[in-house]
Length: 387
Image 1 (cartoon, helix red, strand yellow):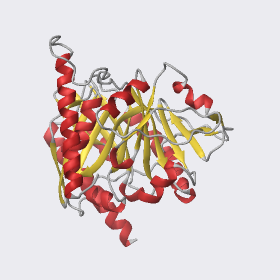
Image 2 (cartoon, rainbow, N blue to C red):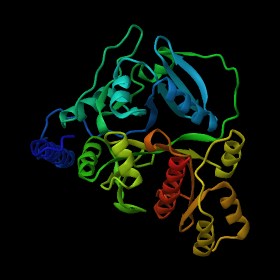
Image 3 (cartoon, helix red, strand yellow):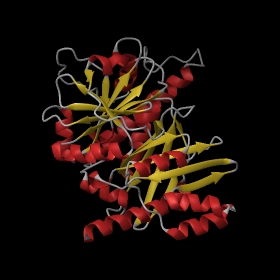
């Protein structure tokens, strides 16, 4: 988004238009005497899951990316029939690694370095989703479609990335069978228990947060949580969580101002907003942790005094705390609901993976642990610079 005065004015006008039209349209659904502000405007879209996340890489960073995926026991399941694009999969998680030298992914790589360039959301009607988004001012995205490829409806997203929409009304949900072919499995690592994408965190400047919040809530049925101030050792980051009613899609919008913060450095080094981390959901964090250890997944080390404080704060048993400490697992609890977190080491200008478990209906994101995680990431970054 533009930072000029005219660009800011255009952004505010577009956001205001989105918000007003979306609100009036919602009221018109129940007040029959009130005309729709945009006749024929499709209703807000219920996203039912994240179908895929795509990374733009060059050949050197492809090796880095695939090494991390192997460390989490992902398998290279398929490759594109005509392009340098691979599908890595575990459970219902589809990670696309794109090392093409032409096309949108290549352009994203040139502008931001290795990064998440595309995300696919599952919806009931892909065309209607694009129709609503573009009617509210979102730019539609398209690029040349090769022989045998699907023309998947899409719009532009945060930081110039793309959001594609997958439905079951046509062949869109068969994209992995139509455009990709199976690869010989030289090895078949045992899955680590990662079931699906729990949430996607996007980092942006403070000034962009409201704009992207309006972008999401005017198009999709996403509920807002309260804004949380996250204490980075070098400043404060604002975090706004969004989720579909049943939690099938969860997004975190993180606003950074200080370049010295971990999030601010990600913006500076990646030349703009984008996805900074992706969390995968497991049903048994301790079993998953054992698999990760055997596959040599490199995880973020958490300071030992965190676990001393944890034991006192929640009144936890010594054995339980020891199991958390040994695996560098962070813990949070709200009532009887519990949350567990494992963080991978940052790479690609500060991007990282997270593995989480939710028990008892926990709905948050471990906000009390964020300063601990950020301090550990800062410590790791400083150690890497000295090495």
